[in-house]
Amino acid sequence: METELSEFEQVMRRQIEDFMSPKQGDKKRGGATTASPASEPAPRAPRSKAAGAPKTGHLVKLAVRTKPLEMDTVFEHASTSISKIEAQLEAEKAAKKAGYPIIGYVIETQRL
View 1 (cartoon, rainbow, N blue to C red):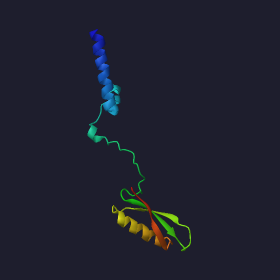
View 2 (cartoon, rainbow, N blue to C red):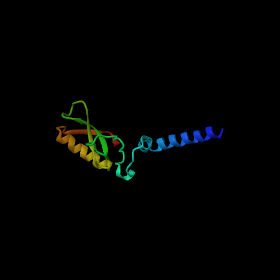
View 3 (cartoon, rainbow, N blue to C red):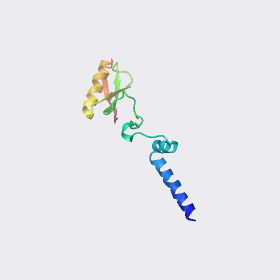
View 4 (cartoon, rainbow, N blue to C red):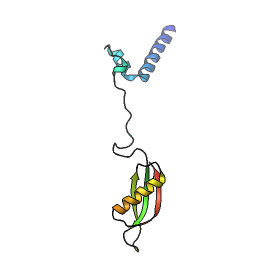
């Protein structure tokens, strides 16, 4: 009974060690000598956004037109400003620069 219990404890400890640090557990079993864990580079988490995407700011959607009696078109602008009003002003300037002289209203503003 005690041998089964001690074997069970050894197996559980080994599994817990493997779960907590899988790289070290594999190297211990292989018999290879390991360097200090500080010398290994830390694993990096995958990025949720692309490298060029703004990390903070607002996504502003404007209703814009090129002619007075034309239907509204949606113009989107991603601003890096944390201020909602500044982001709207930047979006309006970008819309005018893109060739939409008439800015109707702000449809939506989302935080990035």
